[in-house]
Amino acid sequence: MRIAWIGLGLGVALAVQTTLAQMVAGTGAPVDLVLVVVVVVAIATGPLSGLWTGTVGGLLQDALSGGVIGVGALAKTVVGYLVGQFGAQFMVTRPAHQIPVFFVGSLVHAAFFIGVYALLFEGDTIVSTYHDLLIQAATNTVIGGGAAIGLQVVPGAIERRQLRRRWPSRRPGD
Amino acid sequence: MIDLRRRTGTSLVAVMIGHVVLISIQINTASGVGVFEGMAFGVFSEVQRAVSGTASTVTTLWDGYVGLQSVQAENEELRRDMAKLQLRLQRERALAQRARGLEELLGLRRVVGASTLSARVIAGDATPYFRTVTIDRGARDGVRRDSAVVSPDGVVGRVVGTPTLQAAKVQLLIDRSAAAGALIERTRVAGLVMGDADERVLRMEYVSNLDDVQVGDVVVTSGIEGIYPKGHVIGDVDVVQRGPGLYRTIHVRVRVGFTDLEDVLVLVPEPAVGLTAAGGE
Image (cartoon, rainbow over all chains, first blue to last red; front, side, top):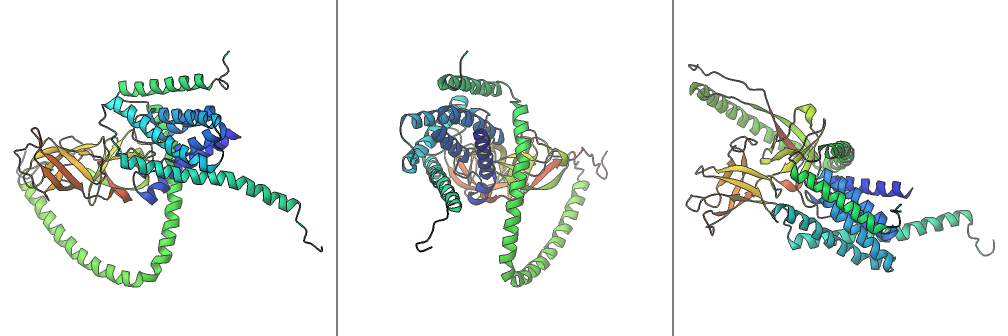
């Protein structure tokens, strides 16, 4: 069941990234929604799920983009693993603690991605400016933070609603 | 027997080795991993088409509703514009007929023609690092690898990878690994335009410090790379500086609005047609 949810999350992230994000922010929207899903999964479930989510999401993203297949997957695998390990070692259950993880994860991903391309093509192919990378990391953090808050708030709200339906509160004097 | 569920480090090493092998295969061979790329692109382009179609329907409905408020005034303005354009079209048609007659008279041959095919952009790149888009035309419509893609404003890019039946991936000219042969229209100085970090600007390389290039010069395709037909507008020279070596530093501002591309034209090659001019062979 968990795998199905992760797969659905990756599919939705890819669809939104390639269509709606481009409509809103134009070609080359400064956001990586697949990376956001990888970090969310890694924090919630650990390094193994994180690395496999990174692998699958990264491979799909590479296949749909104009780059070499495997580079994005490698970067996301490493980020998924590292974030998962970090989540297992430290308490990062609160959204406030997760926000820096999204930011640092985005920077680590960019470093790996650009680094591998620099190794393959002598640094000439992918040269994003630091400004672009920071904007991208900030956007990922905002969306990731929103998702983290949503994931923490929504299940509790649903549970409370279900409980209220089962045992409706009685007013005094009833 | 190793339990991979417990040994995450082993899994990480195994997966990373897999990625490195995958990357190495593509770097060593020109074709790349066609099967995986083709399958993923083929399946997902249908999802993209559906999402894009739904979003576009919602946008159209909303635009239609909001647009009703000013539609009457806009209609009148459009009618006036259409009348002007019809006049201009007649004039252009007359000029084209005259040019065609002159071309035949001079004995020029049209060896390979190209017909255009309109296409809609249905998706952008899956990563923020590359500049590719997906269009809703594919092999079924005659789109091939390296088909040139243009818009009324200028050159857009070329088809990369193998198109599926109903979709194709287009590398935009502003992608950092894209390039095209180019000419300064005024002086016919040749060079090569390449994508740069800035999305609205291309670098023009291999133009000698001795050549005459000025800010505002129009840059057009030279057709030397065999992908883009000669004479299509790329952009205007924005910066010209004397370079440190043999070549000038030239920045070309593109005319196409790459950030909000919606409709493009794909140049689909026609079978070779030999037109013998009057008085020719």
